[in-house]
Image: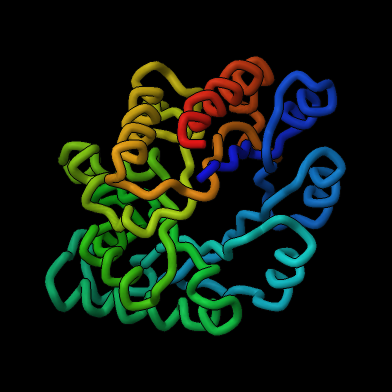
Length: 271
């Protein structure tokens, strides 16, 4: 199975693609109509939606999301597993008791139901987010492997593994990153996100350039897929660069020029 390699849309990535300096199978874009249109002039695109389950926020715009999926190469409707302290005020952030996990899982499944009805479980993927310990807005139950396994198994949906999110969560939990990664529902892997991880302002951050230690994790993922321990995802995205002030300081053309071909080469082994 060949794996499509993507990169976050950014002005820098757009310039490189227009100049023929890099190649990409698909561009990963936010659900912004103007960015979708701009990116489609350069390459096939898929939309990464901002929707969350378990959070105290508005429900997904199913009709608009369906329109965007139909107009692009978006095969899966993604949601972020984000049970929040605001939504679950009765539980401590770090509570992983049976009662807390049960309440979180049932709420996640209920929030996921509209997407399952609209798109079918085979076209829905859930993404792991970052748990940062007691100061986190995300409940620990939302990153517990057992809870994520139950969510995937009972819903029938796929899993979107963000490797950097998992590494930072593992560090917050005080456990080995690979022990945590291997415990996640990777048997249902459909999409993969990779980026560099580093310490900024005293905390671990993602969406940074990959350093050699980050590439070692990419190699570990490829090795597991080649060994048959993990299935090959349909898409792997280099989550570096982007649009707007959140990404402006980490959207270096030279990084994309060097790291996107390197990522493509590594995942070409799976063809």
